[in-house]
Amino acid sequence: MFSISSAAVAAAVMLPTCAAFAPAASYLTNNVMKSALVAPNNMIPAELVTEVPAALLSAADVATTTATTAASSSTNLLSFSDQGQNLAGIFFQASLLPYLGFLYFLSFRANRTPNLGNFGWQYLLLFVLGTIPSGIITKSVYGQSLANTDWLHGGAEALLTMTNILIVLGFREAMTNPSFQESGSKYGNTPKFIAGGIALAFAVACALGTKIGFEGHSAFLFGIGNLPADTVTSLPFVMHSEPDNALSIPTWAIHCSSVIEFLFAMDITWKFAETTGNEKWKGLTWGMLPLHASGICACTYHFFYNPSSLQFLVELQAFFTLLGNITVAIAAYRIAASNGWSFRELNPFPKSEASPEGIAIDEAMALPYNVVETSESELQLAAKLAALTIVSSYIIKYGELAFDLPFSENGIAAGAIVFGIPAITGFLYYNRGKEESGEGFSLPSFGGKDGEGLSMADVKKFGVSGTVAYVLTELAFWAVAFPVASTALYQTTGHWPDVFNDNGDRAAVLAFIFGAANIARLLVPLRLGAALALAPWVDANIINRGGASDQE
Image 1 (cartoon, rainbow, N blue to C red):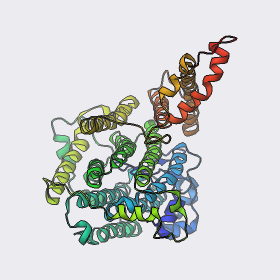
Image 2: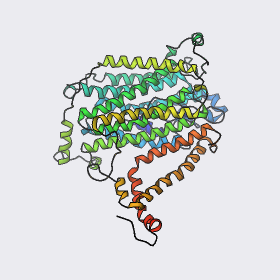
Image 3: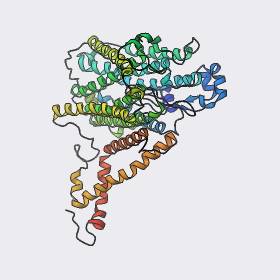
Image 4: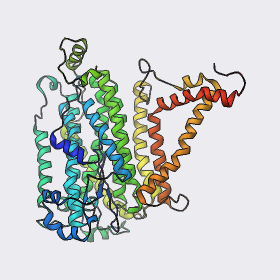
């Protein structure tokens, strides 16, 4: 069963949330540029400006360095523990509970979730914990955001990369190792020890980095792989100079590898349906898609060098984190329910080992994996990941200097990247599902029998009245969508959107509406239920006022 250590619980309480692969963003006030810490796929809350108690700074061992800064302005201190007044902070806080629910359902014993893969998902909580001291140090010592402090930025994101590696290793071995269930993992506890070592190294860097001379723009891993400035300017395609806050090659490599690894994780999760004989695992891949979008938001923000005019990407990142944590929680619940989970599992008292439910769960636990042959060894897979990571890092870091777009702060282009890449990913999985089962995608059902819930057929039973009722419920959504999106932007930026003259405002409002529409799609049963409830009134007061009902 799923358990969380006291440290992880502390992180969960202090932090706005752990987004299943959500990069961190930042919220700076006054004259400080807003920017976001990013992790490539599912990501984490933003740094928020707030006054940090002196005791907390002492615990981070930065009180001496920050004394003069704190005296000059309390806004130079920040913490991840107070983001309630920001829209993204609200999204991040709300996403914590569904993520913990996801971990609980994923760990249900009858699911046969590989231990190492399950540990990887839980390790993400340590990534969240690690962003606290790094965020405090970047603001209190350097007066800037974590996204612009490369050595801490890359170090924090390394924890996220480790999360993805653990997930891929764990699930892949369960699928391909014939002796896995009998003799356990061939890796033993080595990956966990390595993951712990990386976390410890990052903690040491946070404690000693400022004392040994690391500066605000010092490069992660000393910028190994960065091309000399003279070499960059001499390249024939280069048209611009990099700003000071440009990511180093190691930090871009961490981001790119996390995005690629998460795509690997989505693919392996899809294939795990065949390994377990349970098609519900494919639903988890679909649930991971918004988390993939969250990571793309973060990388897009870095691609444009973290401009404050594209702050809406931070809100989108937070929104996709919330949406993704909800969808993976739903997917994990469906997996657990298909394997015998019921509300009886919440009973803290010992259960009868001879109960029919307990016997069925034990039988499900004992089912063997359907081991599949793989054409790639771990070494080949690692080489492919390394090649893709290195090539993509250099292409992004230096290739974007050949274009005006990254320096244009173009909200429409940023939105196209954020929605376009996940849309392509979703389309590929849609076709894959269609080829394998004849059905590309179906929304989960929460009612009916054998997966049959409310449908448009139920609405059509009311004839014209049902159709009109459904149209009215859709119009009601769009009637409130724009005012709500505009208010959300006002709460975030302090000004009402100018959708006619400001591209950034227009893109932000449309992005919020698009996101809300996608959440509404997940609530199809509720929307259909509202239409059914409204149909009799429509019939009596609009279609057949004083006449016969057209209900069939």
